Length: 189
Image: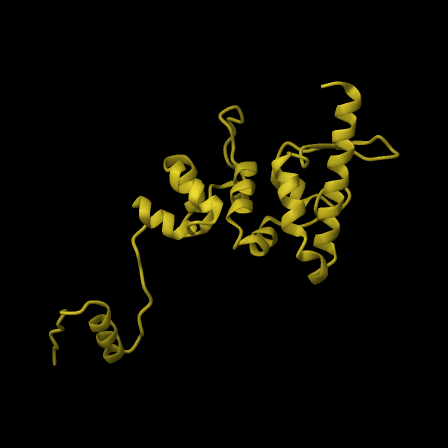
C-alpha cells in the first residue's frame, strides 16, 4: 500500500471514530447511528490506528478495551458494558466486538481484567462465540438474521430449550399440563 493511500485510510479512520464518539456523546438523538459507525470501526479495524488531521498525530491501540475507555478524542470515552447494552439485539456487532476483544495465540498473556474474559453463561455473546468456533453453519444463520443466537445454540445442542413457569403450585401444574399433554401430576398431601 502506498504512503498516500495509507495516510488517507488513517485519516478516514479518524473521521469514522470521531463520528462514532460524537453519536455516543449526543445521547438519544445520536444513539440510533451508533451501530452504523461502530460496524465501520470494527470491520475496518479503524480503532487500531488513525491519524488526526491537521496535527498528524498518530493514535494507536492494541487492545479494544483501551480504545473504548480512552478519553474522547483518543478513544470513545465509554465502557464495554455501555456498548453491550446499546447493541444487545445486534448479533453482527456482538460478534465483531467479540472478535476485537478475543486474544490471539501471539498475545500469550494471562487475562488481567474481567472485560478481557471470554463471554460466558447464556449471553448472546457467549453463544455467538461458541457458534463461530464450533458451528460456523449456524453462526452464519445468526449473522444473517435467520436465527437468534439462543435458537442456534439450542439447535447446536449447546443449550437446552427452557420456558418460564409460574411460581404458584396450582398454576404451575396447569402450565405443565398445557405444555405436556398427557402428563399427570401425583399430589402429595
